Amino acid sequence: MSGIRKFETVRVELGRRSYDIHIGADLLDRTGEFVAPLLSRPRLAVITDENVAALHLPRLEAALSGIEVSTLTLPAGEATKSWAGLERTVEWLIESRIGRDDLVLALGGGVIGDLAGFAAAILRRGVRFVQIPTSLLAQVDSSVGGKTGINSPLGKNLVGAFHQPVLVLADVGLLDSLSPRELRAGYAEVAKYGLLGDAEFFSWLESSGPDVIEGDPAARARAVRRSCEMKAEIVARDETEEGDRALLNLGHTFGHALEAATGYSERLLHGEAVAIGCVLAFETSAALGLCEADVPARVIAHFDRIGLKARLADIPGTLPDADGLLSLMAQDKKVRDGRMAFVLARGIGEAFLSREADLGVVRSVLARALASRP
Ligand code: GLY
Image (cartoon, rainbow, N blue to C red; front, side):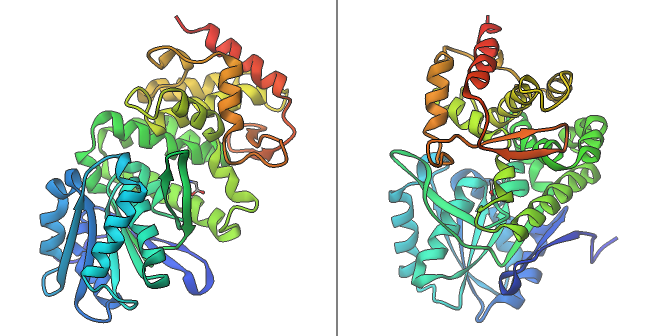
């Protein structure tokens, strides 16, 4: 069948800043159709990286025929999400004469989306931007909700702005080009949505998660759609993270400390840190008597089935001791008034934000997890 193919739409309801997330296969080839109505003139600036450009840029350019496209292709990797990368991007947009009424299109994973979104936020005090996320992590998390920014030499994501995109095109076909490890790391964020607020979705993942990993397009579209629906609902309630949005950080307080302890390196990808962090959050919840004692084992069993890291023992090399990890956690930017914020849970799908967690219990959970390392 030629012509229109199916896709699904999730709406992020933010008043005048509301936008659609379209989810489906082959959406990249239809970019022109979706973007053209948003253009004030047939002109578009694309920001991407070298890896993504090699894989997907020719298809995007073919999909934008009739539109004058200027492309900035940046080095791939986290180092691009820096002051230097931002300066280069903003100066390039100015040189390319991208004006207030033009559109910036981010084609890439979380690094490109965050950087291009932030460049769009500050260029001429705000230019509209579109996200075409190419990684699973970007499709289910970073491209949705308007968090944009760069890293400071002192920490990740310390410089940035809330700037919502005007459209997100999540083409699940693009996930075929991810490495198995990157795909699984992104899956941790999908599982996170079930764990934090939708037990039925988590049960579905327990049976269909392997299909998501193996490339079943319908399973992938369902996983991305439900993740985006949940993120859209939470962002609509709490755009700037005064409350509920912090639930999206399930596993992240532990995870950020583990990423810092491993030097933000290939030893541990962000999603892998989130998976282990989710397990530690459930182990802490069980140790505090908040959830049943067998829940953490269910989370570990699921990540094992998917082939994701789930335990501290799965991290190669040395790690700090429990106090060392706790002090890395205390540096997390979600510390307020000396209290550490944890997302804990009363069960699968029942997460809540706590500033009351007994740090002695957290320390013993970490010590026990560290002791199980070979
Ligand atoms: N990645 C967490 C958030 O967007 O709030």
